[in-house]
Image 1 (cartoon, rainbow, N blue to C red):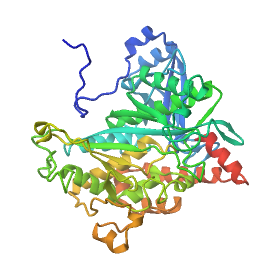
Image 2: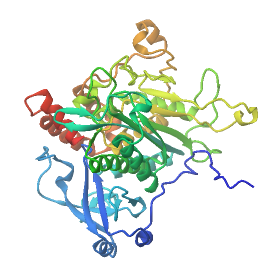
Image 3: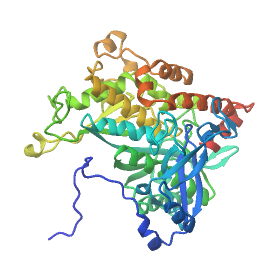
Image 4: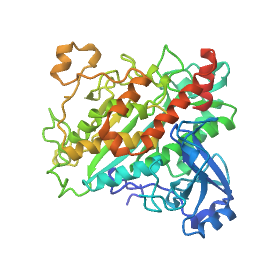
Length: 490
């Protein structure tokens, strides 16, 4: 009898986050707890609490720490418009989110929820405040459940290892999947292996890592989780990457594009949508999980309405997924980054949404009436974006499509849209350009009333904080100084 581990198919019913419990901390010789949050401009922040003090917090009916309400508008060293010195939130820890920090022995990290410290008019005490990105994502996911839809999310994390940030100097000049980018006995190989071991020890499924096309560029691929847990895991992945690199004297940056003669760094986001109850796939209509036509229509009805919503609101979502001016240097035609047209295509890397289909089965019984194993790769996302805001906007957009039973206007685009004539694009429903600039994406968000209504009060805060960040990142006089500031913060 085989002792090999048995693996089930990825599904929301079989996948869960492998975090650790409060009861197990003594087994890991934990001394400190890193209470962690991510603000509206994707800066990861922590407060380090000794374990004894953390246990004292847990004795409270609402265990957490107080943080000034300026937390979401305090950008680097300046407050954004609308944020001031008055008021406090209670940041209530989420005990289900605790992970070992392999890069900091004796430490664990934990996420949480920003809540009102005292009752506020029109809000229920003990629930997430409108400005809390993690709470916003949780609300979207819970709303989707009422429409019988659940999701799994995985990420590709691309980054560049730098020897120096002034001047910018990559650790090596190697390229995509090149073995010379990971030679035995080198520091870069040691860094990547330590990152890999650290992620595995922290309970994150590492599916692979490899070198990418730009100098000093690498990619970490992590497995699917439910959306909130996936966002938490991505934050932990980024923290592991940057801290391990720092330990070895390097700087890891997720900056969108440092070299204009090669590709940039992305955070490609893989999303699958599943009915929670396959016998009653939707309270709106029978959205089955089997493709209607495996040759011409490879997606299920549920996937179709979800995709229609994502594409309908994709221009507005780019304000969250591509949040900096620098983000738009990566989103060009011809460099396999998703292109500049709102489109989707089966295994088309020049579409902003790529349909990833599984390999065909040689067993006809497995291929018949099997649940869909499709997922969508959203390419117009980079590592300067908050995973909570990215997923709240993308899944929220798909939810709007599910709620309205939106028709999928765009057809499967099997050719890069930029290579098609206008008539050819119109024939497949590809008529809208992606935002070509930071200003255009923000204007699209401000004009998208449905998405703004779904996401609530954080949109205005996000726009204000982003404007302040933009001013700070472009304050240095020279381009070299601006790039240096970018890589030092992201």
